Length: 399
Ligand SMILES: O=P(O)(O)OC[C@H]1O[C@H](OP(=O)(O)OP(=O)(O)O)[C@H](O)[C@@H]1O
Ligand SMILES: Nc1ncnc2[nH]cnc12
Image (cartoon, rainbow, N blue to C red; front, side):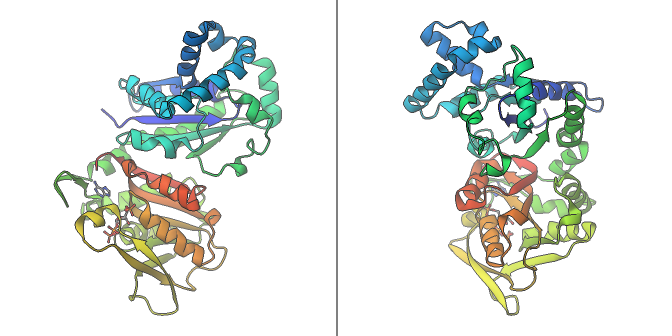
C-alpha cells in the first residue's frame, strides 16, 4: 500500500476546517490518476464521547447541534483539561486511536485538534506515515458570518471561547510555529479548497515521488545491528536520480524561488542535492564545511554528531564553518540537506546563519528524507527555530 498521508486540519473556529476536510476527501477519492481512499474524522469526538459517558449528556446533540454544544462548552473544556491532568498522554492516545482506526485508507484528515504545533508533537508516533498540518484561515469577519449561518455545522472545537477572546492567537504571525501549509478560506464555495488540494496535497501521491522513494534502498544492520539504514545519497548514484531529486525539490518548494538569494548546504550529503538544485533554480550556493577547510574570514559553530554519525563513530562533535561574507545581510535562503533526523545538523546550520545575521524569518528548509522518529522538528522548535518552514520530499520510518 502507498505510504499513508495524515493531514491535521487546524485553524480557528468557523474558519471552515470540517468543510475543507470534506472537500479534500472528495478530491482524493475522485482523483483520476490514482485510486485513493480518504476519510475525515474529528479528534474531539472522542472527548465528547467520554464526556457523554461521564455526564449523561446527549451525544448526537453534542456532535451536531451548535446551540446544545455551546451550552456544554465550558463543562466540556473543563472535562478535557481534567482528563489531561489525570492522563497526560491522552492527546497522544487519541491521536494514535484515530491513526490505527484508519489503517484501511490512504489519507486520513483529522480536525478538532487543540494542540500547539501538532506535527511536532505527533509525527514520531506514526514514523511510517507522512504527517502534514494544513491550517485553514479566514478573516474575522468571514468567521463571524459563518458562525451565524452554519447552524448545526460543528467544527469540533471546544476552545472557541479562549480563541475568540484572544485576537493575538487569531493572528497567524503570532503562532510560534509554522504549519506545513496554509489555506486561505475566505471565499465561499468549494473551488478554492479543491484547487488547493490539487496543487498542494495530491502531489504527495505523484508517481515521481514514489520513484524517488524506490531509489532509496534499505540496508539492514548498518552501521550497527538493528539499524535499517536508508541510503539516501544513493539516489544520486542512479541514472536520472539526481535530476529527479533536484526537480522535485524545485517543484515541491512552497516558497517563491524568485525571492531566494542562496541555497545553503553542509558537507557532505547536503552538497550533492543542493548543488543540483542550485543549478536548476539558478541560485548561488553557500557551502558549510568542517572547520579548517575554508579560507578566512569565516564564522563557525560547534555541530554535535548527526544520529547516523553518532552510531558510526566515537567522536562527539565537530566544528563547522562558512565564509563570513558569502551571504549578504537580509538575504533569503533555503537550506538543503539530504537527511533530517535528530535535527542537530540543521540546528547548527541555523545557528551559523544566525551568526551571519540571517534570521529565521528569512530561512526555509528542504530535506530529501526525514526520519520522523528522531523528532528533529521538535529539537528545532525547542531551540527557537519553530517558525521555519521545513519540507521533506520523503518520509521513512525505522531507527
Ligand atoms: O538530523 P541529524 O541527526 O543531524 O542528521 C542529519 C545529517 O546526517 C547526515 O550527515 P553526517 O553529519 O552524518 O555527515 P555526512 O553528510 O558527511 O554523511 C546527513 O547528511 C545530515 O546532514
Ligand atoms: N535509518 C537511517 N538511515 C539513514 N540515515 C538516517 N538518519 C537517521 N536514521 C537513518
